[in-house]
Image 1 (cartoon, rainbow, N blue to C red):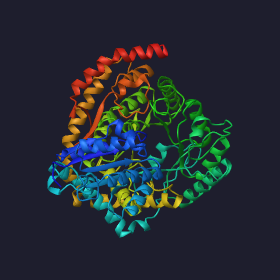
Image 2: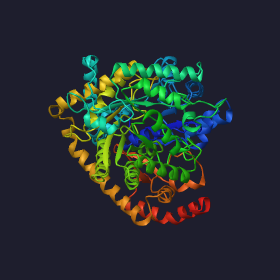
Image 3: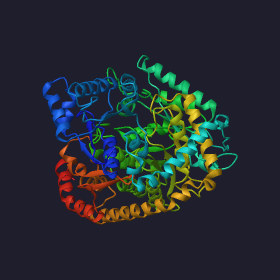
Image 4: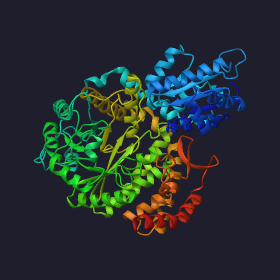
Length: 628
């Protein structure tokens, strides 16, 4: 392959997933290859290839841009993916654009869900390379045929940490010693497993053989063939099974969307959307009883948030409350509240939680990341939430940090981002405010291959320990995402095995860490990135506090969002209310996500000045729509 060869990357108009394409574009351009991304006209044509007009649009685009390599991404229905891709390949072969002596297109790649990738691999006997998710930057480039000599040194060295930590993970799984990992014995205290038990008590008493992180896992089976009551009964059985096994410390109920939005109502023909369809206080009490001695928690509601928080206290003695401030409302389509009403409800609920001395989590930063924010925004959004919680009187704050988000983030960048986030939030600590770090793997991090995913789970556990590498009390909580995440729902057996892998990987990494030298060799790179992220985050936070009146209030946090201080270029909402927030470009650069303009990183001072100039417009929107 030669650098003058041209890549064309395509998606359909209906598929909103762009992060994978953006990452591939960035990587190829860093290797000095020209990349053409399909415009809207071509995206629409790809959906309707049965028409001659659409075929002509596709062929003209390929020919006029002299494209040699085509990548197609489709992450929706696998059957549609196979059909769309099949029509495209058939068209290119028929018109002699592919797989003939005179063909200008030398290779075609497909990125999508595992079933679609499996079918395409079978149908084309391996002639089409597929991307199933979870590929590293180096793996991506190699699959696309980029010679090693064309891959820049900064990508090779930047991915060195990832290669080594993944090798550690593979060794953990290969040896299989994790299978004999025994459950830890919790220290008992008078309130243990009673209505007066708390997360803080569980952390402070911890385990008989010394401090270890508490393990949290999410579970939520739903079977459309069962009645609602049968689904809840099945889940209660799961709770008993997990409690009896004794590996899990904190059970997170994966409740139905309807449980969050329409609790206690008649659901009739409303769509469940997956998750446990809990719909009565008695059912929550039954779950709590079945789950003992585990601590129990669940999702916040999407309306009547404070009333539901009170109900969670009565029924499951909720281990901690998680509130998302800006999210789970009209902004992301997950709830009925407007953004401003949501902020008011959530802040009022934080005050209630503080009044009963319970713990609050800001379920914030990764939701910004899902909408394409840069790494600095990832940090800032949680710092704002932590400061808001402290001002509301909260004494205990769970700092959730989702690694591998987006999954193309390099490990050294993830660690730099995590360390800055931890430092800025920890600075708020005093005698009345305690920060509890909770780490987890990314939502779409795991590969749809069981052995590889198990190795990834072991590797990301080691990575969690590198955030605060000399502190044996960090992280305090690990949210274990099961290795089956990319393939199917985790059953109790899979959850328990995932916990064994996590516990064993952490123990082994702590024993071997300084001899392996994985993080010590990467420290210089991490510190360089850490310095710039911290400098920019502090600058932006200072500017926000100086320029937004009463920042730590519903109106202040609304203006912060509406004026574009927290960029979300991939927000699906097309409301004019949020145009400024969306009017940014982000791109993966050097393994991290940056705000860019014309392909170059936007200087932080330019960004700040632009946001300041947007404040009057954001105030106008707030006043005209909500009366200030």
